[in-house]
Image 1 (spheres, one colour):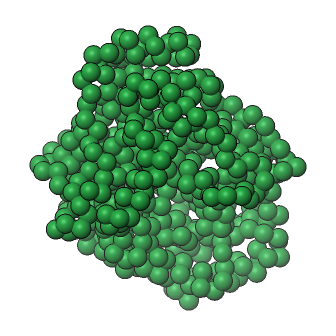
Image 2 (cartoon, rainbow, N blue to C red):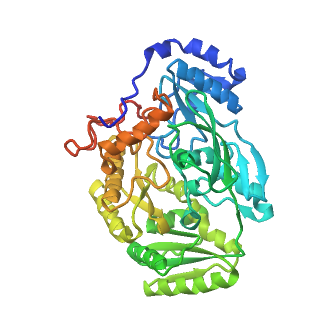
Image 3 (cartoon, rainbow, N blue to C red):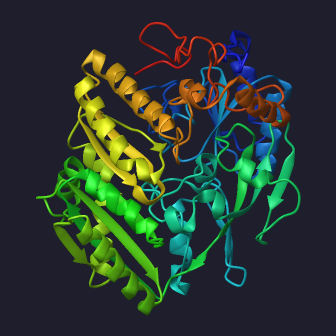
Length: 498
């Protein structure tokens, strides 16, 4: 078999809830243990709001020793633990279980050290992504990974999902910008991986932890790399009469040897939505816009601007605007950063998908998404980190219409399957969680998944840490070629729907 068993609700554990609550209070402040039915409600879901489940109990430790003691206690008593950061995840990775202890890290919210000499920041995992840049920008430094939710998402959650953002094309995702972590294993062991130096000896365990979605351990401290702000930063706002032309421009820019700091595409539905929402000033008479940001020395940027301008014209760009100052450049990005909330004004509900494809496949995959939109009768708006092929189709539906959530999920699954078929992968930065776990056999065979599970067991031999996430709950991947074995409308029988 290629997967962990479905996490069955442990009625014995539920019957011991009062004792577990009393025991947890021994490890932290009494007020940090939350168990009242109404008070645990805010923790029942994350930003993937199609599913919810109240946890048995929530505990909010304040330091690493408390985390260690709590995990050791849960391990000894066979109690499941679900780690949670800011709850902004989009794949259901922090959804609790009925019989779990939800371990919230919101009290780990301090920046511990700013070291400009070594160009790094030591921070607790509950600090928001944007707060790191805010803490160092007066000295002309910044933290490169910048997901759209950077004002709210935590750096610990960024590590769990290996988050990217606008600037991941040139400066990499989280894994390229984390130097070290302190992590607590399920048995209470406290480990330090990496540190302030760039390279470490031995196996790349730091790379293994980054993107592990809370299945291997709980991160309690992070050391990240900070960068000096470039001398010059400019952006081009380009408009095209087809999404395919915008995609081709992306490929041509990279083929020309130009690596922009960021390169983002939005299609017409999203252009209008973000304009209405954020007043970004985008052209409305185009089918797609492409934002290209270039940084470096002033002379270098000016040369690159001319080259990108030439590429855009060769692809029949009908709108070209170059930022005159930093305020205008930020206005170009204003709408893109507001893309997800802007869709909320177009539709009562939406699912934000996350797949990655080879850049040269962009035109082909976008055509397929359009075909699927017609097949399912659901609208879709597209924005994506065009430079590294990370797509974010936003599928719009109405959960008040019973059949539409199921259609939206099937639509999203078909997009991701096509991404894999095109030589891509299931996720670029949102993680697998529960959203994509039944799609894992589209990418991996039994042996592949078993090797991954062997690593999971090496860190958490009883499979108590974030169970039911990432790995498919089904029969052998090779059998029949079918993706789901769950019957009926709810493929996630272990997690209730709204």
